[in-house]
Length: 254
Image (cartoon, rainbow, N blue to C red; front, side, top):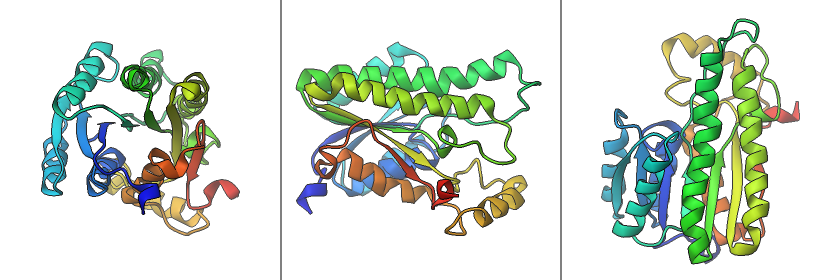
């Protein structure tokens, strides 16, 4: 359907080496998008993502760097424009998660998570939007979390929860700033998802519990975040900006 078509456009995806970022990069390729795949230099899956994009018939480039370093991001988005063409789509998936009781959490643990999940996302949006605003066209999707809306039972993550709440509100703020200049900014807030971090052997029992607490009685597959991302990136969502789309299997209804 033409309304949902992204064919021939160029995207920049952070966190493309694994989990949700990798799946979204691949589904963008299936939708006809050329993809700049960005992750840390030591990302084990980044080369595989780029190779799979090519197997799907689209162009891809491997981009490495750190989302907390603005020079890395600026260099990478400029490389997308040089090698692929005008940047019109971006999905910011890079992030980390961990837990600790608030009274025991070190400032180092707090700061590292904020540096990656909040500062890193802001810098990513900034680098992407600088190019999109020049072209007068673009769509950015940020990966937040339902943890930015609710507090997950049994998880002690004051830093993570508040950081994801910051991502949601930052998305709205940037959406308002750039709305009249042709750049839309939206967020997806996944519920519990079977990413590599959540499918470790030590997480099996906890994931079963989370599934039982979700109205749909299961957790999401990373692939299930791709459809919402494609919708928000496409012209089908042309009047959507500043939206935080919960993709949580109904979890926040309870």
